Image (cartoon, rainbow, N blue to C red; front, side):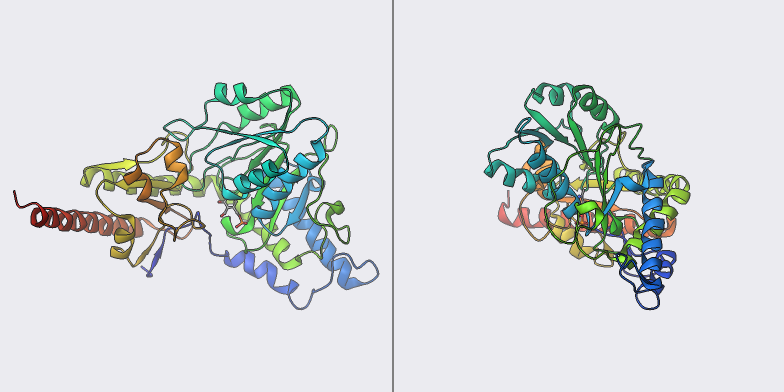
Length: 394
Ligand code: PLP
């Protein structure tokens, strides 16, 4: 085993060596600007970009022309939410989202509220899933956009995307999904799921950081979107700026590998995750699994151990990399807003441990990690029992 053991694949993933190999020529030999029309350097770069566009599209059953490249999912989310809102202002000013969305969505919505849009943050049920009837009830004739993530980044629960897509399509409302944690991990088909826009990022699927994509449906009629940046007109003017060719090549290759290996990989990871869950639940009392186990990413486990501080536990298992909630919010001592939205009490919501299994993890690692967690939880609980005896001797 190689230490520390990495089990934080929702935060980011290592670049797959095959992805790195595909990218390398585009830093030096084939360094052209994909917009250069009159020489071989430009043509090579453009061809590589178009190959990657096809690879991304293939993974989600889209057409290549429906993919535009961005700097990552934060930008894709901003472009989708603000772009649709600004373009649709004359039709309505209402947006619907979930209380448990990623900050890139929630903060984009907050900014739009400052501009006069009205946003409904639909609550989730205790298993983290949205109740479709509740979502439907929030829709009005002024609703222009529904944005609901495919898989949650903390608890891994899978929202009923196809049903939400159908509901929106029937009403002519644009449906965006943040597909970051789901794409490449579980099958996502933008046609079958009636998705109009979807955000993707490379670094969650074994590609490089700083590159992502936005799927924008082109048929039957192209969606109208106001870009968030102005410039040289690249990416059909939706996302101007010189293209990050090595990054794009990496994203494309990463998508191709996921398409080929996803089904085998996800069943392997489900086996590892279930073994980890089983070991923790069978050997410890007072463990809560946060979120639906039925509708969940195969590689996610999110648990809270009653009476155990997540930071102390993570320090105790310092040769294992996991996190408490999302990477962008760790470092704050606020309880997870995702767990709070599910009605989980403050103590458990403040102390989740998120395990994100990935390509490199092995059975041996899972057994080592579960052993370390069980031992550490037991000793932390003993220490707090000793303390409480000292504090209250009776
Ligand atoms: N959306 C979700 C669900 C995420 O998990 C992340 C990653 O942190 C993002 C958006 C932001 O992605 P990026 O890091 O590419 O900006």
